[in-house]
Length: 262
Image (cartoon, rainbow, N blue to C red; front, side, top):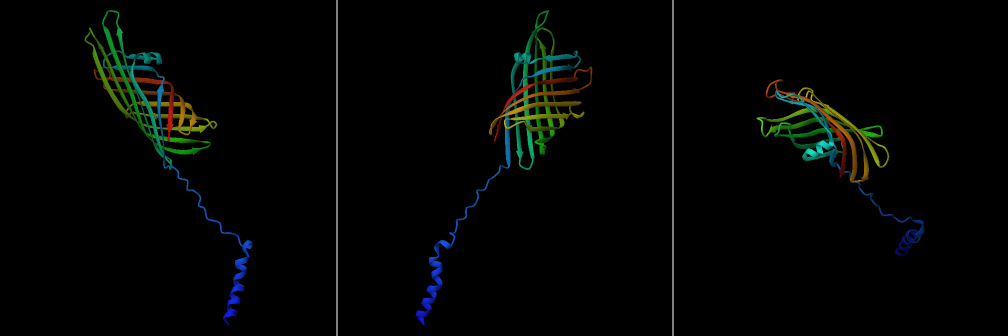
């Protein structure tokens, strides 16, 4: 009986043991690598605005002063300046936009009757916007809303005459705007942007516009080429009184920047 059971068990096992090539080998399970996307992306761009300025300004009871300075004039009288732009975007479309630039100018003017008039002007602007990005055709549109802070300091003095006027004016404009970006090809991107602000809260009105292209040098760096204009119409105090200040000036010119991405 034991022998019969042994032979029967061998007969049942033999097809499994010797079928060899009829049974496919078990392949090891290889899991696909998990690709992690960054929640945030960042850009920082130091840039140079080859600025010109035109318009007029009035301080107190003094006559209205016409401002007409090209880049050569500004460069000749420039003491110090700095400009930079920063963006942070979340993958859900929300982000922030920060931009700051200032120029500190000074000049000495010798008058026809002698003496020297010392003039100084410091103009700075800071933008802080919330940003929301949506796809639009082959590109993206960024909706912008936030504030633009203006910081203007103007001083005029004379070494012989009793003339010493100093004005320190800063104000904040609420601002809304948009920027459209689209790819021209694999290497070049096109951009247009515009904002409007003030609405009588800070400036009576302030407007900016920019158009330009970016050349993709690498995944980490772009060359930014733009033309930008920024205008503000602002006044404070009572016209004809000592504390009156009016500023109706456009700053404009080409921009050259290096945009670092990570």
